[in-house]
Amino acid sequence: MAGSSHGHTPAAWTGVTIMFIGFCVAGAFMVMANPLGFWAGMVIVALGGVVGWAMSAAGLGQPKSAQQPVVTAAAAEKGAPEPVSVES
Image (tube, rainbow, N blue to C red; front, side):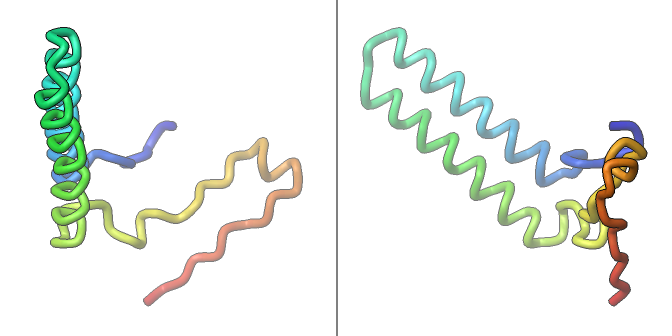
């Protein structure tokens, strides 16, 4: 989607990077047949979600006003309602 900035924030990049590292750790320990290491990797994955959420809550995520729906020309032809912009 051209012009979209979904996910291009420090919170998203940090959270996904931590989750990817956890995924790699869990995968490596799965191959080594080590359940404790696998679950440690899964904890890292969950930690990435918490870190991303906390950073977003701290203001490093996408602003709420930027999360308005986008209506394409095809959707407008099908009778989709126009999005309503709410100014705060």
